[in-house]
Amino acid sequence: MATALTHRNAELLIVENAEALYRTAAEEFSHAAESAIAERGRFCVALSGGNTPKGAYAELAAQKKDSLPWEKIYVFFGDERHVPPEDSESNYRMARESLLSKVPIPEENVHRVLAELPAPAAAVQYEMDIRSFLHLPGGVWPRFDLIFLGLGDDGHTASLFPGSPALAESSRIVVANFVEKFNGYRITFTYPVLNHADKVIFLVSGRSKAQVVKEIFTSREAAYPALGVRPENGKLLWIADKDAASLLA
Ligand code: 6PG
Image 1 (tube, helix red, strand yellow):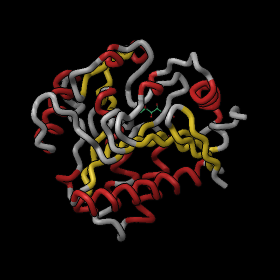
Image 2 (cartoon, rainbow, N blue to C red):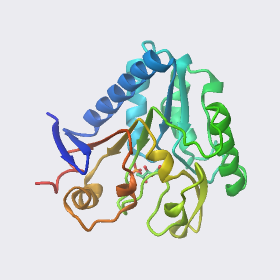
Image 3 (cartoon, rainbow, N blue to C red):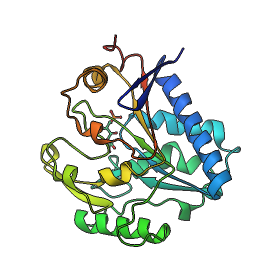
């Protein structure tokens, strides 16, 4: 049984467990795809990395392999680890194995970060790829139909980590963000891109996220990077399983 809460213009949907989260996320992807394709002839979605979405992508492949017009779906990535595509840490590899290799999406519809390049070059290349694909003039922000995001137990999202330089970025679509705790770079969308999306969906699962979820939805002082995601003219939905929401009254 799902429970809905609203806070700070964000809807929080609490679902029974991880499996229910995967099904709900797959349904949300489907609905967003069908309406974007009906309105604009195509669906541009940015996938999240990490572990939580893997089950949702697999559910999507299982449920919608034959029922979505995959030739009209264009896949991007909200962030990427600074590793080559075959690396076990690669978000692209995770998405390929759980979804993209299981549905009839044309290879050219999948826009991955060339994370095998030096990080700054990978970020510039990805920004150019997005700008040319969307025919975006300089200074104009892309408007993705849907962006999936995750939540770290430190309150990071995409690769916008607490105290990292990318939090202050206001002119680039994609940057190479040096993350001290990894002593390395991540390539990530910036806040303006997340906040120009038509819809942003956070997928949050497990007890390890309960404290940060509680603070995000109850504390006025909380200042986690995930709280910087406030689509200006779009919808914001949090889907959390009962474990992740277990500290919310
Ligand atoms: C990444 C993600 C990151 C992720 C969170 C949550 O590349 O790791 O984009 O933002 O969503 O770290 O990760 P889990 O789902 O594994 O808890």
